[in-house]
Amino acid sequence: MTFLVRLPRSEYPTDAFAGFGLGEFTLLTARAGAWLAQLAYEDEPAKINAIASDWGLETVALFKPATKTTLLMARTRGFVLRGRGAHFVAFAGTDPLVTANWIANFDFALDEDGIHQGFGNALDSAWKDIGQALGAEHWPEHLILAGHSLGGALAVLAAERALRELRIKADAVYTYGMPRVGGPTFAERYNQALGHLTYRLVHGADIVPTLPPAEIGFSHVGRPLACDRYGKFDALNLFPFPSDVPMFVTGALNGVRAGLLQIVSGLASPEIRDDALGQASRLLLPAIADHLPDRYWRALS
Image (cartoon, rainbow, N blue to C red; front, side):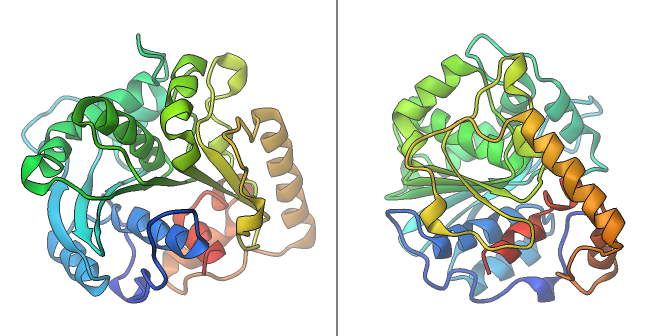
């Protein structure tokens, strides 16, 4: 991953797992998941191990793209951690400077299983490592998956594949700014098995959760929970059942409206990070700025 998505070591809170618990949805567990999703963007093993240790976790496996191939193909990176009575699988989202991530995003034809082809290929690139990490030697008593953006889509696909191939049912899947993962057939199949355990957080005018549009044959999975720009997530707003919101047209209009308001008012987004990239991100259009990982963990702080 590149400097655009990594976070300074000092920004990771040592209390990210304060209040974490297995079972029903809680905002504190959602906060822990958001920090797992952020940590998945890191690519220095020592840094990942040290931060995981701060959280009372240890590394089981780090999965990353093969370094020997020169082919441009969809791929991902992330980790399997364990501790606090559970195993955790988290995936990195899109790095704007990594071509393979864009290949995964834009290869959006549906495969024979009704899955976004690029997302499916990206998971394939890491599945051997994940399967081994969750195999007999490390069989998880409880399993939590998390991811931001593309990483959220891969968390969903990994949960489905773990159930189908390994007979391991996730306790929860936490996603942040996740795009649609497949078509109606896949969504119906997934929701019957895991939809009530999948929590899909959407912040402000984030455009990514509206994509790919339902109008071209895609459907969301899981139970959405939305919050306003600069607001905080409220567990009382969690949908009691899976839903396909937000829709593309509504989301696009909200993004335009928020952008115009920002231009007219002359106000930048509130400060979240005091580093140079954090300051620069305050000038982004709302539809993009609201998608950033730091907007999610701020809304859960």
